[in-house]
Length: 113
Image (tube, rainbow, N blue to C red; front, top):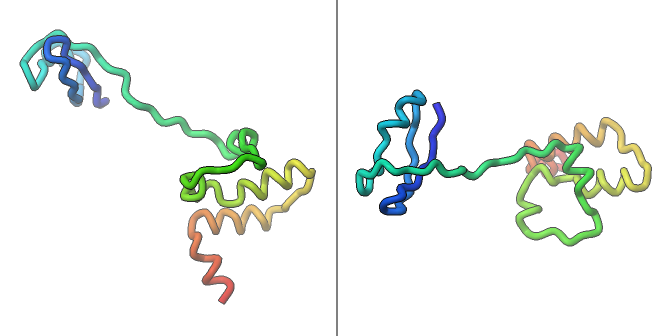
């Protein structure tokens, strides 16, 4: 049951609606002017990048903006990339600690007490 976005060609209004069946689309009308001359819009999409791809594309020498540091998936990314560049295996213990930090960043303070 996808939600589609449309633009009315009469009033240029945009709206979205749930389309249960393909034949329901034929009877759609603009909620603003009642027009039936509608164009389906391409909605924004999200793209998921794997950890492997994120690591491959990460430049450890470039400056990161503030939003980079608010994403918990980026915890340890710099360390992993540097270790990869130097040919160092950080081991499974590193991955375990990293996953714990990513899921519960406050745990670093709890564990150190």
